[in-house]
Length: 282
Image 1 (cartoon, rainbow, N blue to C red):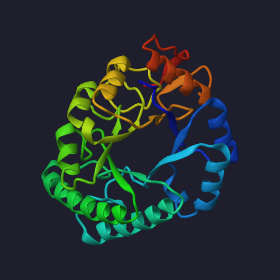
Image 2 (image 1 turned 180 degrees about the vertical axis):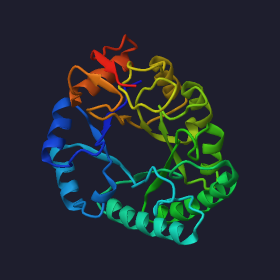
Image 3 (image 1 turned 135 degrees about the vertical axis):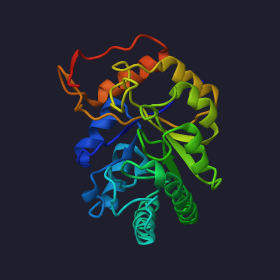
Image 4 (image 1 turned 30 degrees about the horizontal axis):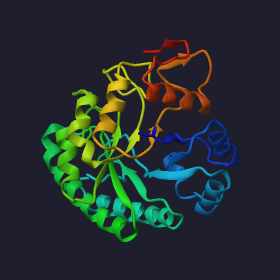
């Protein structure tokens, strides 16, 4: 079986020719567009398409905007109907622009901010309703909504709850974030979720909180996770969501695109993972 394509999220970096060139030079074949919330409205999709073709780097997925704080205007699970409608309208516009240049997968957070237990069921039901509506909109544009598992108190923080969300519409799929499950072993979760997983956010963590470290810097058993994904039929790219700089780990140098390619090939080969010496900041 061939190795997976290697992909990398833009992780908020400026999306320009230099970025595409650095991906191509390192052997990164695809990317996920992920930007600060204030950059989406000014995204030049025509330029994005041009750079993708020029450097032969596929735009595999687009991470729809999200907020980490409670009460945000963009929230698929908002208790307020007007917020849910605004979210659907805003996402719909981005999806239409993205599909016009061939982007087919759109990653979404099913909620934002910490969710109180006394409102969790209501938020979950509203989230399922809006996900069904957005899935219908995306389907008409030839796109797929990929629901990401969230850490801590977000919706989809267990494999069971994530499946409850995506099962509300057969067209919904999963973006598995490998460092977001804090209540279960992600290697085992794959067995339950695999038939719905179409894309990944690859990163490592300490099993305490999300860290978005490079594999080998945390505690995930990468050979087991990689083999489980292959065995259960995952066919998408091995796509990292790891920034060049970490807020919780001070490395001796910044990460660069070749580091991700080397790391992926070490995982594909089943060997020991080399890491850059670093100091924990937590």
